[in-house]
Amino acid sequence: VISKELFRVLRTKHGDEFNSFISEKLCPVAGDMAVEDLGIQETHLKVVIMREVDIIVNVAATTTFDE
Image 1 (cartoon, helix red, strand yellow):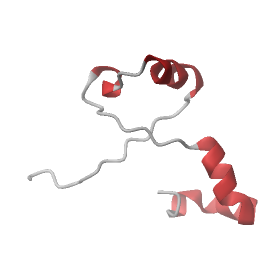
Image 2 (tube, helix red, strand yellow):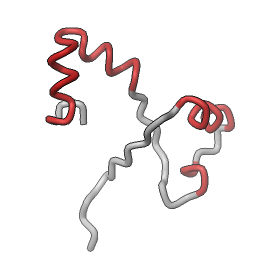
Image 3 (cartoon, helix red, strand yellow):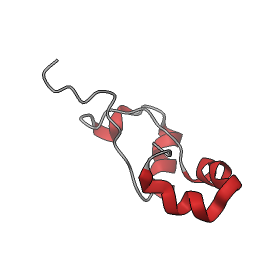
Image 4 (cartoon, one colour):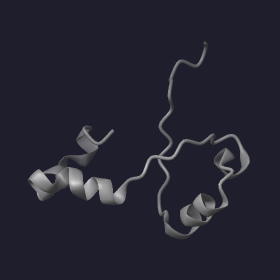
């Protein structure tokens, strides 16, 4: 995802430090958008997400809708 054009401005701004910058800001979490609390069972993780996350990006594992 971070190699996409969307991140071009940040990549230019941070140069060689881009990957370090991104790793401090992004944290992938497996979940199911169709299930309450994303299907996350771990209480601490749910609390951290509720307190610290501003944006959730849903990245589908597949985009084939007629499997």
